[in-house]
Length: 202
Image (cartoon, rainbow, N blue to C red; front, side, top):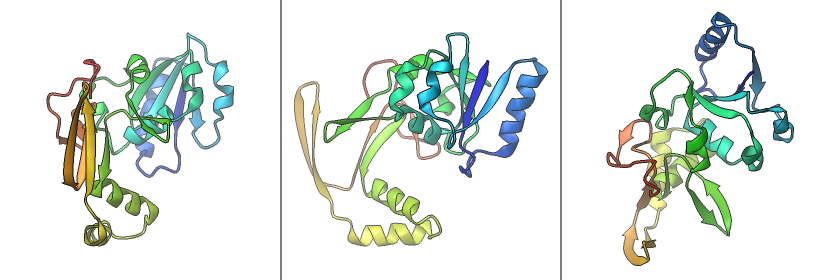
């Protein structure tokens, strides 16, 4: 059985993409069920077995949202990705209609804030770029350009301390910092061409 998890309120999940996926299942006589992300309870995740498939229909946001679910480790089904979003930086490194990402999600890196783990799949950043993104998400009807200009006027650079393999590095007047797990970020910007998800480093 294929369980397709999607967010109906995400403007990035195109209806045509979901119809294409349903057509794929019907053509192959595969049993499937569409699950509204907003209605589906992860408390019921135990109903999925090793013979089932959980399809994440969306982009990077869908994957990161799924990674934040505490119950995801209990999922016995294989996790498949179906590209249906606009921010598909993770999917750019994968070919195929339905891609098995089960093992990659198990090895997803994380960062700590107040001792709480936060997982990510492509990259994680802090600084002026993150401040702009937060402001735009908070005021969805506002202008991206105007928001960015206002942030640039008020943002203050910070001191960054990084420890890599036991060695400490300190940088002053930092405007933004990005740690990459994949090659792409920001909708196709290839800022880490040598990144390898399987080398156990970011």
